[in-house]
Amino acid sequence: MSFEKVKHYFEQFDLSHRVMELEHSSATVEQAAIAIGCEPELIAKTMSFFLNDKPILIVTAGDAKIDNKKYKEYFGEKAKMIPGDQVEDYVGHAPGGVCPFATNKDVIVYLDVSLKRFETIFPAAGSANSAVRLSLKELEIYSSAICWVDVSKGWFVNQS
Image 1: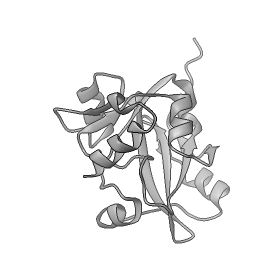
Image 2 (image 1 turned 60 degrees about the vertical axis):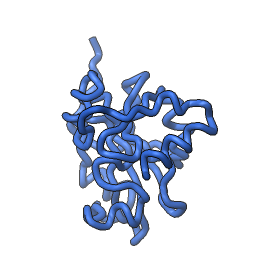
Image 3 (image 1 turned 90 degrees about the vertical axis):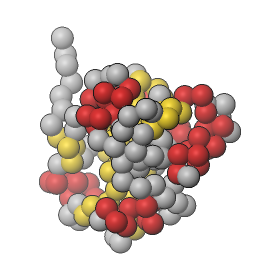
Image 4 (image 1 turned 120 degrees about the vertical axis):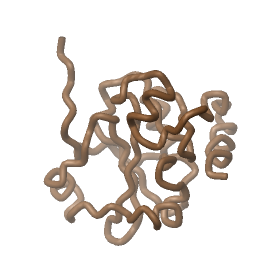
């Protein structure tokens, strides 16, 4: 049902043809990269947290990890992930399919700077075997993100 919600969301922008239901699981970054046929860093993973007891999503590159120090400096509190069994209730998508599209109304979305290295990225599309191909600009627009943040580590810009 969540997949259909995301597909319907993209219909209004004539982009539903980019929403893919995959033959294999895309629940993890590694699985998604294999199922799509891309490098893991191109998977835009969406992580769910509580901030002031409200749900937020942070979308990072597949090779990035949340840096607890940066998170606390930016948001003013320690990172607290939403427990897996509560994610769907708070966000509108179950773990493995969490994405920044067609979420519950009170969910705030942030994009991490680790994504800015890429022209095309692949976030999930509401299920554990889905993805949507988007440009970085399209992700900015259709995720309704409120801003870019720098709260990750473990990635680097290739300057060759």
